[in-house]
Length: 310
Image (cartoon, rainbow, N blue to C red; front, side):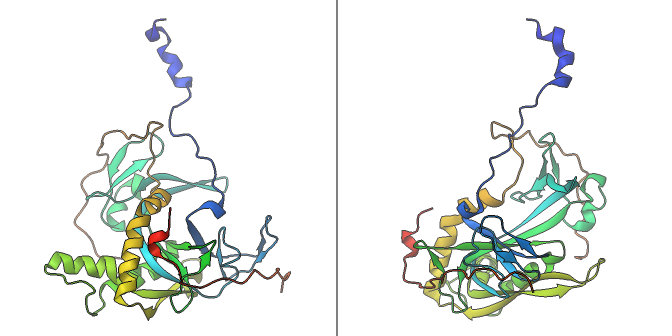
């Protein structure tokens, strides 16, 4: 067969891009999404009714259900960029950057091409393709009680996360910013400015139990419910060291969960194609049915971080 004779048929071929991944049961996830419920809804599997204005957890109804406050010890945070498109009430990611390079590079889902991302939202507004792109921030950690004791399920700690997106971005970002600027004694013994900066940005936010509640923030569409994060109990140095080791141990799982960079079927990407002019200099930063009661939850911290398998 002479392939050149049939070249036009390439327009009606089936692309060999990344197949749709099978949907994972939320119960089987390592990191469970804690979200603010916007409207009353009943879960088909459990029969539990979520109440508006409360915190609920996907896959962990027995632990986080219609809560007004949730506690965790943070172990990971990550800022990323996502250009989302909505069609027929379905939202998909059209271009994504996990910001692993400097400058950051975004990869499109359509043809796997890459482009340089603007440093700020103002920079991205200068490029038509990038105008819808928005920053998101993830804060993930271990579910605890207010005293920092881990909530244990089936002999293991439970990991949760909140997603700072849209009006919810500021509360998460500000919490981390304030933590990185705390004037507190170092846990380690930094001897260089780089080591000091590492401790402030990587270690500081892991040193406190984080209390998560719900607040209101103004927007163009009226007040919106957002996450309110507050520092709680400060952890002692030995626990922080354990948390650092736990963070290292779960890093691959965290990246697997949140890195949505589109890939071809063979896992590769096309070479970088700069579709954007170099970014400008950084600009100025800018009474319903009563549910059945969930079973009691163990908050025992009598377990070893080193014995956890992932």
